[in-house]
Amino acid sequence: MAELTTLARPYAKAAFEHAQAHQQLANWSAMLGLAAAVSQDDTMQRLLKAPRLTSAQKAATFIEVCGDKFDAPAQSFIQVAAENERLPLLPEISALFDLYKAEQEKSVDVDVTSAFALNQEQQDKLAKVLSARLDREVRLQVSEDASLIGGVVIRAGDLVIDGSVRGKIAKLAEALKS
Image (tube, rainbow, N blue to C red; front, top):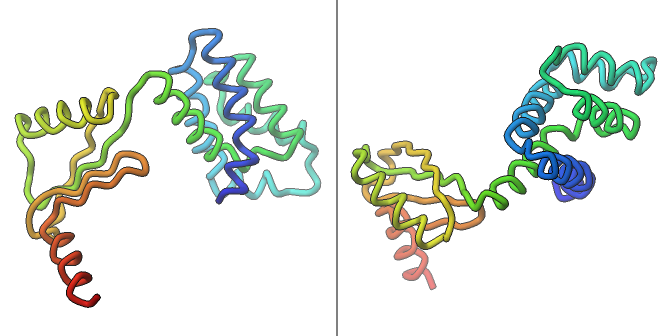
């Protein structure tokens, strides 16, 4: 996984810098998201691995599949990625681009898993507290998991806050073992 990130990083940075310079972060995020989805299609993966096709042919087919969703710079980006055999890295490139974009916009996606449904008022309070703690705009993704017994588990990037009863029982069991 680290190797894929290392290979994808220069492409994501280049795309981000271009999009930022032209104030097109949202457009590029959407284009790279589409490119990532197309690259993961089974038929497209077979085409990208076909040894009989040149990189130019692969790029042309890829761009043709995406139709008019790509502007000229995005098409050039796909061509360069194809020349360097990096089209299979498009999902990783898209993910890195979105991380750079979120950092620029000072926003973060937060996954909240709760034992019970959270009403809108509770979600708003949680978003406000997390926004203050993380110093970012917070976008909540809320889900339920009855196996938590009670409480919530919050995930924001590599930060995990486990306030669930299940998590507290697991910590207690670990403390008793040692």
